[in-house]
Each structure stands twice: as C-alpha cells, then as structure tokens.
Amino acid sequence: MHHLASSIIEGLKGRRSIYALTNESTISDDRIEELISEAILHTPSPFNSQATRIIVLLKEEHEKLWDIAREVAIASVPTEQFEKLYQPRIAGFRAGYGTVLFYEDPAPVKLLEEKWPMLKDQFPIWSNHSSGMHQLAVWTLLEAEGLGCSLQHYGSLISVQTSEQWSIPIEWSLKAQLVFGKPTGPPREKTFEPLDKRLFVHGK
Ligand SMILES: Cc1cc2nc3c(=O)[nH]c(=O)nc-3n(C[C@H](O)[C@H](O)[C@H](O)COP(=O)(O)O)c2cc1C
Figure 1 (cartoon, protein in one colour):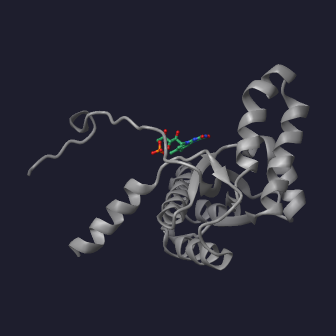
Figure 2 (cartoon, helix red, strand yellow):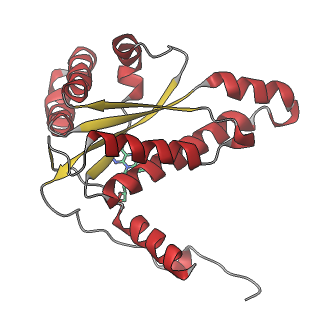
C-alpha cells in the first residue's frame, strides 16, 4: 500500500501548469485515449450520476479550437485588450498538441434534483466538483506520461461554436479546457503557503 500512495503523491506533485508546448506528443493517441478512459471511468460523481462528458481534440482539431477562440475574441473584446491579453495566450495554446474539453450534461443532474428535492440547490455545485475531479485526474495522468498541460476557461467565449463544430449538445455545460503538448521546459517556480495555516489535525 505504501508503494501505491507514494506513486500517487509523485503523480500529484508532477502535475503542474506548463504553458510552453510544442505540437508533438510524448505518447500515442491511443494511449491518450486510454488514460482519459480510465480517468472518466474511475473518477467519482454525485450519486454515481456520471454526468461528465469529455471531448478530446488532437492536432488539426485542436488548432481549429484555438482558431475559433481567436476569432470570437477578436469579435468580442476591444482590439488593444485582444492584442495584449488574448492573442499571445491563444497562440501559445494553439501551438500545443491537443485540448481536452470538460463538459457536464445537465440531464442526469436534473434527475437527481427531481429525486432529491431537499438537495436541489446542491446538485449543480456537486456537478462542478465532479468536473474538477475529472480535470485533476486527466491532468495528472497526462503529465505522468511526460506531457505538459495548462487548464483554461474560455467556455463563455467559445461554447456556442464548439457545440456547432463538434456536434456537441448545446445544453451540455463547458467547464474547462486542458491544453497539452510536449513541454519545452520545466514549470515556473511555485511557492507554498505554510502548511500550519492550511491543515489542522485534531485527536492525533
Ligand atoms: C479551478 C482552477 C482554475 C484555474 N484556471 C486557470 C486558468 O483559467 N488559466 C490558467 O492559465 N491557469 C488556471 N489554473 C491553474 C492555476 O493557476 C495553477 O494550478 C496554480 O497557479 C498552481 O500552479 P501549478 O498548476 O503549476 O501547480 C486554474 C487552476 C484551478 C485549480
């Protein structure tokens, strides 16, 4: 058991935000699909509702996504803001190999709301929690195989276009985008708040 926990810690530590990526992969497309399949099968969901939906875009399809983001950003933010904030970031994401889109399907969530009216307000929140858990699992697994990833939130900008482009039901809610590719260097330095401000154990 100790060995397994140590491996999991190593995987969690290895999961970092990496922005400088190339359009290559360290693993095959089949391996990418296999890792994401394991993540979606084994990540928990509220009442086992399994409302998470994942779309994986590779190579040209990935580039199409960030071309869409670019077009929408040009059309919806002032030019100066686009050039300063959006253009360099979007170009960086487009330079990667793939993007994982994390959606939540509201249909299973609605069934839970009907079945458990007392918890009605909680289910959409828990749907977000479960999406986050899937994001962590996929992020950790891809980086364990040498890929670099960063988590992005362009859903409010691009979700109409992504639905159209990849025939995704319009009612699915786009929560996050995980961009990945072969890293060109190590992650940025990271600082840690003192643990004694963040972790409290009673009864030890
Ligand atoms: C819920 C959540 C939302 C995040 N949103 C973004 C984002 O929109 N863009 C981005 O570049 N990084 C985003 N991040 C990445 C964080 O900035 C990053 O995880 C944090 O600075 C710690 O660095 P590390 O990932 O290298 O450990 C997000 C992380 C989390 C957990």
